[in-house]
Length: 98
Image 1 (cartoon, helix red, strand yellow):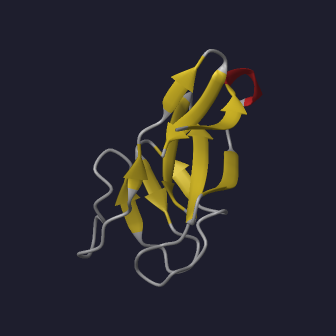
Image 2: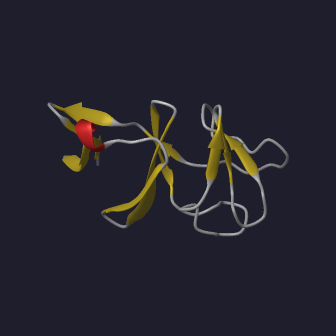
């Protein structure tokens, strides 16, 4: 089932949009023309990533500064992995299949 999240025209750099799909808490991020959908809480200490910073393809947790690759989800300094979700499109809508 397709779950609508946002229209593509509503995306802007710096967007950090928490969304809930079923029981999953996710975070939609848009930065430098790229969009990612990841788990909302840091796998290291369960800190909310709503205020994360993104530089290039790296996400930095605002809680403890852990950095994750947005390409692989892998933490760059420890053995943690950020769950990533594939973005689906339906006309002007971005969403996720669940």
